[in-house]
Length: 510
Image (cartoon, rainbow, N blue to C red):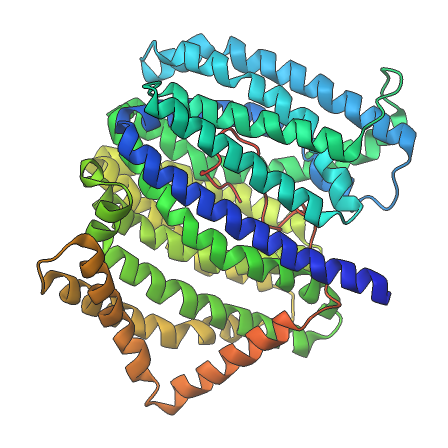
């Protein structure tokens, strides 16, 4: 890689990570403020609609974003064709989303969803028009422009949504959030790219991109089902109010997951791709990455689960108290998602995405089945618990399939997780006891419980094995930050942290 390109990609990594953190803070702000201005029913209604409209979003994208970014060369005639193709797909699936409004209302048995579905349908077209423009900025390595557009668009959308909620718009303030965010994004991308549409025709030369996109779409659809059909099951069986509680608990869960996996994956994927012909170094990197994620995720989710009541009370307010036990149970799934992403890195870096697709065809239906069985056995708490347990159980076969035929061994995957796993119940217990030992405002309980929860981590350093782990963690982070020659995987590439344009900025489908 040339020095110029290395500098561009290195700066691009920093800018992209900064943009991701900025968007996360804005999401947290919108969650905290809107939770106090709107009712759980409002969030539940929008979650019902987005779970269905999101399918139209995936279909209109057709995996083309990934195919465009990874193509070796795209000329202007192909760009023109891609603009028209994306517009055509957007119009088609916008119409289908709007036409599905009566069906959506029938599924949930709630007539209010008809107008909400029709109102959200245009975002399918808006995002379809955005897709090739965003992909072009990524191909041109204009990460600063892209990050700025994303952050400003979300800031404008959050401000408009809060203003609408203050004016008494209710559930429609959430529609404003999506509409303003995506419209601003389209205008900004168009200004940055200045696209030339040309004659309204679609060249045959874009067919290979559609073929690649179709394969990516299969994985995305399966992943989407496993991440979003819980909304459909809860909304249909338990109603909008319960779904609103669940959706806010899930939104809080995704905040640490996005921060754990996003920046690390952007460094890990390109590095692993370069190391696939060096088996020993590849294995060491996998072990180090799992060690980082295990220490970052297991204690984090254990402490957060133990402190769910003051955490939810502080961030969302007293009316959301029922979301606290849901969040605690979802933390199990959070651990599974954080660690399980490493198996995805193995599939992608070794060029085995087809194996991942086959594995998903078998396992994702099991996750979806856990939603139905969980609701039948224990309502929303049963669903959250069974979802977490099934996700956790699938970690083992998931890694075994991912490493089969590779240099990575089961010990490489299991050994880094053992010691942080032993600390997890201690962190949970210490945090819980610390918070219940005092009667104080939520923020004080969080601080005391958090310090107590971290105590087992600090005390573990008296043991040589944990001190070795600490040295490995600091060494890994230092080396990752110094990799100026490792370009980040393009957003939208299979296995990379993916910014979906499903009309719910807080629901991750990565």
